[in-house]
Image 1 (cartoon, chains in turn cyan, blue):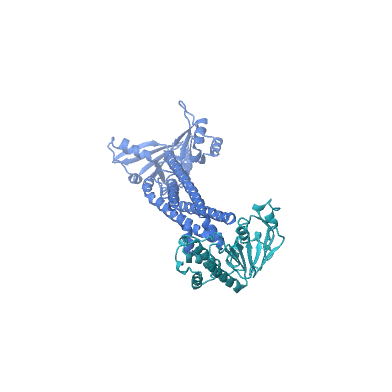
Image 2 (cartoon, each protein chain N blue to C red):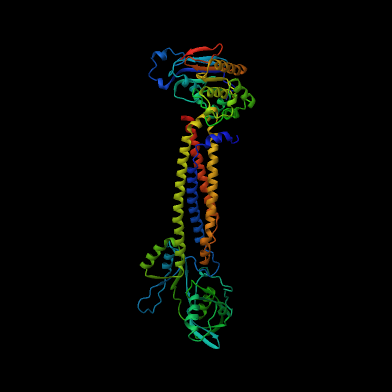
Length: 223
Length: 396
């Protein structure tokens, strides 16, 4: 595995579920689907905007190696990601790509801190104090030892954001990260994510259906 | 990577204790039955007697059928003997050598002299069921060792001694009695030898002398030409006993089995062990089937959790280690319980088998089977876990 991922390039990418719809208006107008060359560079700030059902979550899942039901090609620094083996993907998910899934994928039976530790013990990226401080900034420090199942959706979303940054990354993929947050928390999340990314020059790719992450200088593309 | 208690907490929630207990119980029962079968088989096939065995290998004594009144000896030709040696049921064939001279034995018991004409025979030493001391004769020796059929002693003690007012004799006393053997040759030349009864045989229904004595005596005192072999002793292969009956019937040969019933008992016990073992093995395989189904169900129920861990960067192998730990621990406990059960059951049959000259077989075949079976079962379980986790990684 390379020391870092500097470029993610997409070529003629199309979810298999869209097969046969290549001529449809929404596919032809997309900035990503079936484009010959879409390159995401390290340090980018990108907001993928689209209505529901247009494949935003699918796009992030494809890049994260979670799904492979697509046509076309995705490369990390020129290497086709279909050729990566399990060990390489595990390393990428620990060191190079961070993901916040739309459905968050927290473990409801575990407490907030247990959920964070589950990721952090793979990466040893944050100290307990740093994790506590992040929860504090997001206003949920008092929930640290609560089972996630007892938290509201908005609180769970903030826990999932903290967990996503309990690792080093070259790109962070955030799938509708603030869909359940108010403007104040949206700004805090944007600030935290930007701090983490700026520290290492990482890229940020976020999706939204309109209520997006308030990230300074983000380029918006349509899917 | 160490086993992490948070991961353990996550994976444990879908483990059904009932299913694992069901698997473990079924496996303990099945494996115990197999091991008991194996141990019993080993014990029942182990000839534990050192001398004068009651249960021994199968030997039969063969002779030609006499019909009506026969004046010519019914003997086996060399060809017939060679043919017999090639039968699948005949492991070893030995010839009885009959005496061709008159022999008269006399002994003084309680002041009374008892004398009788005797027939003596010899068979190769390897067919003896006992190994008497001083079983040798060299030309020139004045002493001949003799082995008597145990039946003769019984007949004397219970059928002759008491009605005649003679003392009953133990084997030891008989051995110390001075017995005189008078040999009479063709030219009426007589020779007196001292005979010592050195043992009693359950297998040989005859008065046996060493082969070397018989060769020497026949050469010196034969009244007639050598008459060929009229009786044969055959060590048989128990697995082909039905072939033997057919062969003997076809060739008009009579058999007098000595202890073949004993062989039958050993065979029967072996068969029982086999049936018990097969039943146990079936239970084991069913138990293994239960475990595989339980593992499938467990991994299916935990699919969402497993996918969640894999998304965080956990390798399927790391996750598999937790399930492997459960399977290995369960199988080790099962193994220990089944081995203990088999060893604890052994005393139930041990003394009974020892009493009939069997028992006390080696335990290593049982241990070897137990370890090999458990290693294979565990390897199979681990393979299932690994394959299923790989599928979850690929297909979600």
